[in-house]
Image (cartoon, rainbow, N blue to C red; front, side, top):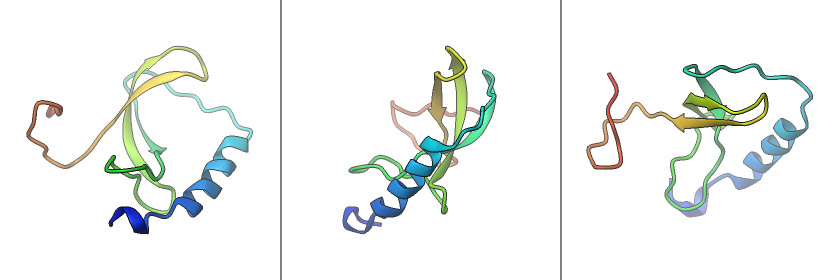
Length: 86
């Protein structure tokens, strides 16, 4: 998919719905979640499927609303910026 065919409009509608939903999400460190990552500008990895999702590892929970997460991939990438976990 090239940069000109990205579906920003659908992602923006979904993002507005996700932002306004009123439910508590309970997460813990070391869990893997499917998260709506969206459509990104440039060459960053976009989310997949109709919810623009990717798996992510919850690294650190700072509060019930703030966390540090690490997006995961199933692709083998060999360079100094990727670390393989098996």
